Image (cartoon, rainbow, N blue to C red; front, side):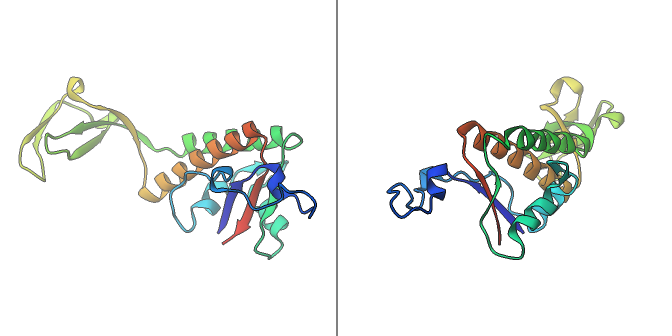
Length: 180
């Protein structure tokens, strides 16, 4: 499993005379906000590209069997490529999002989602508290996409990684990858 993080460029300095070459403080470490799922990173990056090659292959090539960390992308030269990868991750998340559904909530807090194609006005008893829940369009609390739980985790990982790549490039920080 690969882990991504970003640090300021000065934190990568190996020059002993550089006083800023000390380990980064916690506020100087940027990590993606992603779900902890063992294979999520592999599935999230499986179809994503970085500089014309598979992003996973790029990470594997950089690490070469070692623990790392290795520089995955460094601004300004890698900025366009990493932003394209971030866009691809969002596109893949949208493509694999699942079927649109309307959501209702019982007074006890239980959520019910019904695929848009199957919606019709009906009332059911809440399976938790027994109260009546009316499935009327006007009483819906919103829309969401239905997908398998594992696919939802992968999509959340893609969105989190995309946001992380964008933030790291906006700060001008190199993105590092390591094995875990």
